[in-house]
Image 1 (tube, helix red, strand yellow):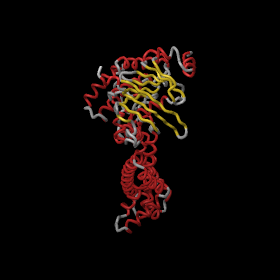
Image 2 (spheres, chains in turn green, yellow):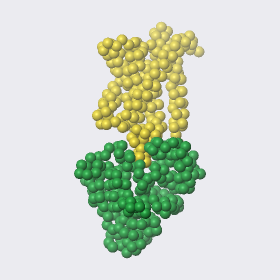
Image 3 (cartoon, one colour):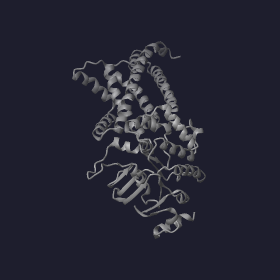
Length: 259
Length: 215
């Protein structure tokens, strides 16, 4: 292991975010190290998705700092909190993969074209090479047999696996998963979780917002429980999910484990 | 049947040629203008958007006839000696462009926000995002409204006769004044206008199919 192995890939400091007068993030601190899988749990409205979206700067934030791979997200580092501008935001996002609840595949492009979009249009990779790498990624998520299909012809689970491949094609430093199984039929959840489990085993750095308790327990290196815009509790899943230290997390677990 | 219409048909068809030429010019350049301005309106900074708003609201709020008169009389006022056709064509392109601008802007706004976020999340900049993701999806949504605007434009070319541009309606009135067979002639004119518009409806249906994809 190199000395950078323990350096955080993602570092969130004193993050505050409000929608108008409603403060949804009230000072979040979070470090995610290389290769770490962090699962964020919490009730709806706890701010977990908002925090994830801030890391990719899909949401602005009022104060605090976020860095990815040492690069500031959204605003200049230092005392002058100037917005970075569109070009630099785009540059940071190249290193952050994001998978959405609603897949958001490009419906007018085939599966392989979806996967090639980032490499070809952002990284200016030659089409032939991008296609070759894209096919390998599709094989990895078990979707290479549908390379020339359009997203509308696929099931939700298939679309979500293609969306994961599309993000991986940018070779990101960290992958963000925003409730990626919540819109799926129950029988399709497993195939997506399996792909995510495989990524975790390969050492991909991941931040996963989910309601899948089993995934948290089995795959997470660390579980973070958020409620009311703050991190209430965090630790190894074997510890805190077995013996929650706070009543809030205990209640949350008992509500969700019954299912 | 309809002997007056039959004997005057060649004259009316000559007029129709002018109507088709004027319509084609107005529809093609009006649509192009609207697509460009509508796309700019979706990506430009606020002052540019205000200008575009003003353009759209002014032209949408004024009858095309007034715009034609204004064009016809104001070009000479600034020293441009244009014939009636050119004046009408330019006026109508600007007029139709305003409607297409609004249709294109609406279509772009109707592309789901998730598409923008997905494009942003793979690091796409604004211009490639518009070109690769937003505009291709918006064009499909814009086909139906732009078709409506184009059909409206074709029919509005009949106003051109008022500033002296000779076309189908002008020819029809000449024939009616000479023959007094208003019913026959205008029945024929109605059919000719329909035959001009119908292929466009067909073409738009094809275009919509061409741009469509499975959902």
